[in-house]
Length: 369
Ligand SMILES: NC(=O)C1=CN([C@@H]2O[C@H](COP(=O)(O)OP(=O)(O)OC[C@H]3O[C@@H](n4cnc5c(N)ncnc54)[C@H](OP(=O)(O)O)[C@@H]3O)[C@@H](O)[C@H]2O)C=CC1
Ligand SMILES: O=C1OC[C@@H](O)[C@H](O)[C@H]1O
Image (tube, rainbow, N blue to C red; front, side, top):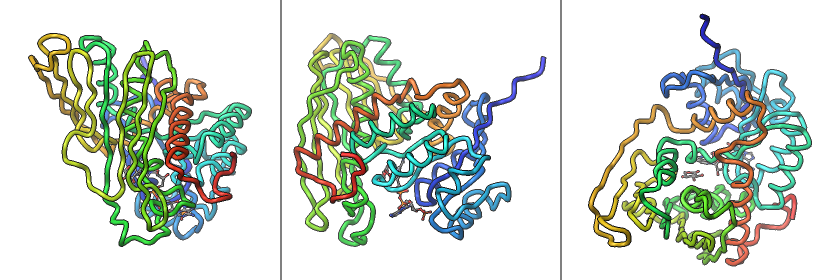
């Protein structure tokens, strides 16, 4: 019997910065190196604000592959008939406009985190995607990685009981004093600051452990937040936020910082009635997890502990690409793992965190209010 051919997904890449490089390197890896046989990825077009940069990117990241077309505009990629879907790797505050143009050209979309600058933009984008019948997913790569999938099944299996509290932090020292104020992490016009850039990662673990927990029934949490802004540009440098899920009941205590390194301790501790799950740093790409079981519920005395290490070939961005290809192949317009409800929830939380911390994006940045 002839073996079934894998589904080929043809990507157009929007922008040529850091994350676009990471994504394309992973997309070009042979999927069989991660045990994937049903989908493959082809990069057929790269769009940049300059055609020279697009070609340089193809030369540097894709070995100058002559089958990849260099476009001197993003619009060129949206109009390219050899593109099934686009990967959008521009700064946060461009995601909405870039995705709108792509949707109107009937391209499927994988858009970097955070999906948009605010909730209103995302609602508008999803309505447009629905109207045009295209697939759209926020690139929440961590949710598709082996550790996240394993943690989900350990929680489902039930021996840890109900979640009670999760602690999660992602910190990175961006050397704020020595980077230009126009850097995307500092510039409020680009949605700079900790919450929009790093916030999605502590949040993804709260979503896995609490929002997805069956008794929560997909309810949105109550949010509190506190921000310390950098005097350099006024964006949030240190952000703490809590999420309370009354239906479980359980809480998350989350933080993100752009002017200190990670603590070196666990990235996240998921605390249950009967034990803990410990996720090492960095929270966006954990390579192991530890499960602790107490001798009896609530005792805190660890009777058994298991650490599982995972091997990842590549940078870990390809798992989300596989999800996009499979969903499109199967005629879906959203992922069941990282569906629109989760991106909407994230934007709702980030809006509220910014509102309580009085972090207002400059006038004209948000396209929909
Ligand atoms: N999933 C992950 O692990 C990561 C995700 N990200 C996300 O990716 C996005 C981009 O981050 P990153 O790649 O680090 O950023 P970079 O600054 O490295 O790249 C951004 C690219 O966007 C394009 N661009 C379009 N308009 C502008 C503008 N006004 N200013 C600057 N660049 C512009 C440029 O490409 P060109 O000149 O070719 O048009 C530029 O190279 C962010 O939303 C971030 O949240 C970032 C890092 C890691
Ligand atoms: O998504 C991300 O993960 C790693 C961080 O260093 C980066 O700024 C962020 O965008």
